[in-house]
Amino acid sequence: MKRRLLLMAAPASALGLAGCAGPRIDDLGQELPTLDLRQYFNGMVDAWGIFTDRNGKVVKRFTVVMACAWQGEEGVLDEQFTYSDGTREQRIWRLRHLGQGRYSGQAGDVVGTAQGQTRGNAFQWGYTLALPVDGRVWEVQFDDWMFLMDERVMLNKARMSKWGIHLGDVTLSFTKRTTP
Image 1 (tube, helix red, strand yellow):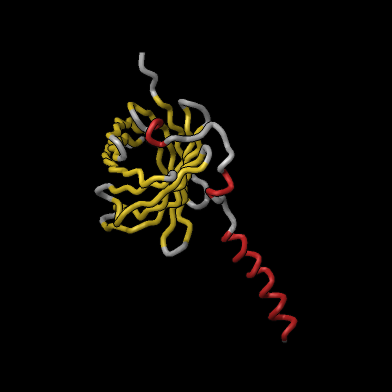
Image 2: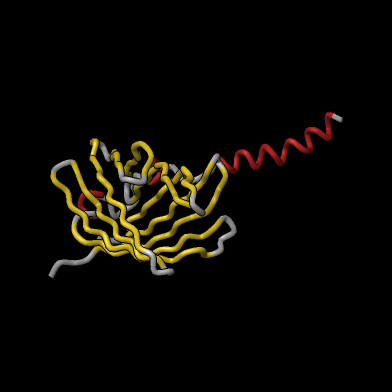
């Protein structure tokens, strides 16, 4: 009986440990180019993205036009979404640089305050989003990672979950507009 319990417990333990594995922001401190969130998200930024369900099926495609501006330690990111089904949405982030690469942020559909930090070329951002689904509003958690590729391009992958259950992923490519 003990052997049977041990045989069943080993795979469960491995799965539990695998669930804890993932990127750590402190491991990315030496990655280049160095991300200055206030510099990158200042001006106009365009993005193209998809939402995939937990099985990897593309559920929605979208584009985003972002008007971004900073005054000192406070920034506003005005995001205008256009989805593949023609619907539109706006989210306005109000960010605050807290020093030492740490940021907080709020938006109308974000529950509480988002917390994030930069290291090297990466920004990790955690928040709860009030997401309308079939006439109800679900509070879902986002583990959001952005990686600066060069001065214009940033890649973004956000894992979405509820009660610790993976619901899907949002993948985006940002391109910062150049000024003539």
